[in-house]
Image (cartoon, rainbow, N blue to C red; front, side, top):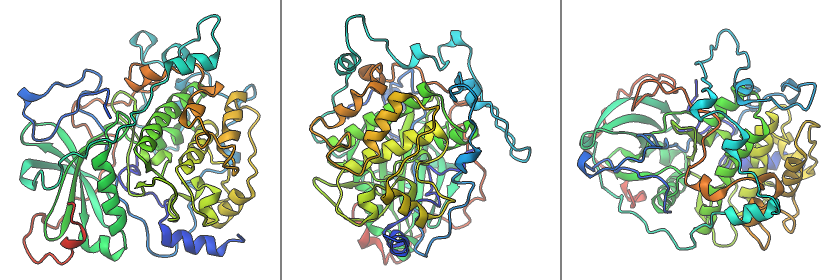
Length: 478
């Protein structure tokens, strides 16, 4: 059962204050789907058959202002505990990847593998497109490449667009240090959304005003099939409200932990969707800075949605802010140097490594300080069962040399997409979600099914209470 890391910051995510303390202690849009506004009536809507009513769930930036504790080993499994089959080490199918035994006190929710005639099986034919005879892999990828829009996405009108009276609260999806996320149903179109409620006093106390405002600004600008959509915001005297899509399938993090690691084609599918999302964000001059499995949600058809934009920021050149997840930080961030959007490509390499191996390359007993030392040391041990094309791609992403890091070179994102590991991916079809996902979440309860999320105690404090608004001026865009 997902622990809702996509909605609320995991313990391994750090803000600038926390990272500074830890590092100091070390030795050194046009979408392919039709989405629906909560205020639209049913007569005004056309729902894309591949989307149903699901989309992406919001995330709350809940970083701790206090010195962090060590990462629990449950968050970062020991590399030695990952399974290593005797042959090539890769599970032969997604079914074998998701059917690993689980502890008896944490029963599996029953992952389903569809039959091959249902076209949802993880197969090479579904995930990749074989190159035509006489054409090179790179050529196939280049011809199928989906070019990102270079035009700046127009910001949508979202400020004060809705009110609490537009929605019926259903249940709590997750809680955090200064807020919670509710599943709600629109009273206008009767569809389901997720509303993130942030307590202003707590946001101010934890010094997250800038990140909260940045999250709203960035989400207001972007529109992409693999990114969460912000529909509207408002505020009252005590709280901030953000209306976003509800993603029924839960986190990729939970699926990866259950699977231990993904087969090469499965990891390639998810990495390709993330690549398209990063390509789009960078074309909008936005740096994401918090890529990790916890922030990747699965819609009901198994496609990804990147959520949690608390650390996203418009960066046309360089920035110096220390924030992110220790395992995923680039060396230039750890060493407090100025950095650019290439840190997202470093994080993509860490993500691919974790999907293929089940652990991150610089993991060390869950200790952030040791992780930072390993990152600066820069030595990566690639397990022998990894695909050689994957190793080649990872070595060009997880490199401290910015003159060699893919995505930061003259070719930009095309250098990543044209790499042999991605050579068979048909990028334009993937951008349209015209390729079946290797895993379909077991959504059985129809629209609004929140069975993939844990139960939490409901909020006892009433929303919409009138009174003195001492913090409202800090959130002018809400």
